[in-house]
Length: 508
Image: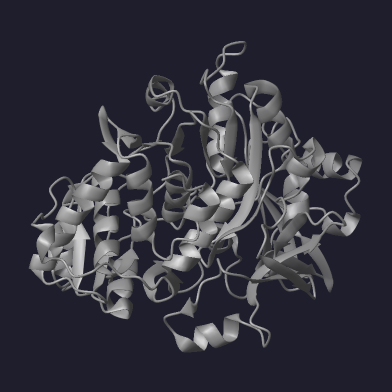
């Protein structure tokens, strides 16, 4: 066999994609973790045995199976075993607790629930029992196995909904996002096309495998036949040993990951943090332009950032051969097949990587326009060269005295201040202004404490319009972040600093 990545991407299902890769390079490592290695051929064979074990438990094509497992080789095996059976999978981030997990189990009508037992001090099995979950089984390091001879033919239709992913639910109950094998393969193919992996590359998955980025990244591995190091728990500097031992060449995850790598690099100037590393790549959160320049300058690697969401795992991606200006200030260009339309400033999407909608038909009807474009809620514009520039979220636009203020514009400027390590800008209710602009900042260790006067003076010098200047400053030890891609949870900041009912906002 001599299938090219392009030919492999035409596979109709994830199982067929794995089977073709296993036939092409059965002995090549696919996943590396804690001294263990699983080859592509080994993944295919073990997934078939586990599929037989699940079949013996009653899992059939169309059976809804929820799983809440850490980033682990066994998790990958389970997900491909379920793909072999044609089951409907609903992955859940391991850090979710009763409210979110209970909601997902009920809405998806899960018939089985795979958990990691007691993990990082939390008893997932007890939670599952508390929630009255059906078919609970521990899948941390022991998976059911059986004789593959009992299995029906593998599914051949990649357009059926077989995946239910969940939005973060930071402002409302999480929404169940419907994906097919085809949409996940399309997303992973786009990622691979953008990053153009090389022979001999070693990737890494340091984010939760239950995130939409899990299959996105795995498809890229199957298309190009290179391995990834899995990190069940990611923390620096502890994780550096595995990055170095396995010779990781491509790392990343999101903006927070870039910042963590850069902080470690600054502890050892003149010494390359990961000698083999050539590329940091990721998405999931805005990237300040100065972070791009700092990573390239101080770490000596390229950084390509992209734009994706649970509903569309890969929308745009920076090209390693793009100019520094494009890589620093845009989200890259869309791949072939991804249509981007900007309507009244909002980015809308149509293409094979776009989800089929939501579990709730009313949410689906609201999310798609009459031409079938997904309304993202993100604001932005396309450059003449086709690069996408994001300017914020619809809900992140602060309306002060009738004037729109972009939180992202102020945040990007604050990130250039030497006494700011990270920043989030929010709008707070105010009787006089409608909303006031509040800047919440983290500071580097030993930095002089910032004042509102110093911040506004700096922003004025940078050319920010007077009506956009913050009227309130809060300095915090750490901004609240989600557990997946470490996004700042602005809703928590709004709740923390909103004035009490009947009170006007205060200026600090």
